[in-house]
Picture 1 (tube, helix red, strand yellow):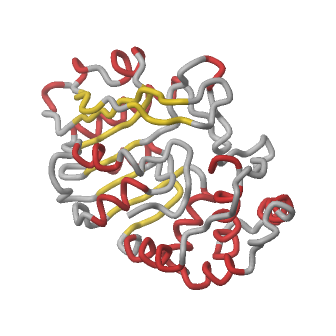
Picture 2 (cartoon, one colour):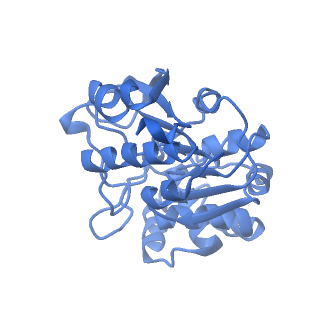
Length: 282
């Protein structure tokens, strides 16, 4: 099942590889603390591999979109139908201004978010220091939105999910024996000039990367299986997710990237897994 949102670094194409990193179905709770477009969750749920799930993100505006899709999909479709289609380029900045004025909850918010996501440059979500969405208009031949049945199908798959705003440490702290966790954090940049920090107001630098790896290992010590994605760099392989720390490097795909101004083409990624670990290997 494809997600509704286009998302920078989205995992639609890699979802089967990521799913295979878990090796078995989830007997406990599935957690996804960087939910993004929810591509991996939707794949696993459609395959019948997970039951109860907690989907979360630090971006509360994104979380509100997933809640609206789950709870008020018909109202969302009505709100989306009221937004521009033929003259979408001319009215892009009008919709962007309305989005920034808020409120940032409910079907109208979700409709504007999804419309801007499809009409804006490369599906990028970026905010300035005032918390305002500032992505420019995309240069597409036409505005393409998912059809109503696609929305309804995704809504059906979200019915069992607890969708919340939370930080990754809160989520990983709750993971326990039999649970599965998938983490798709903002990536370690390939170059010093490629760092993207405008996803939401919270920064995600090397200290946060180290904290995530530490919390993943703690969850694994409690019996959870944690799978993580990142750029395939020496610092990631050897320092953040080292094999001698219990991490398994289960896949190293190359993925198309089209957002960085400096480098287009494919970028190397790594899918790592850890857990369950015995407590006596701490």
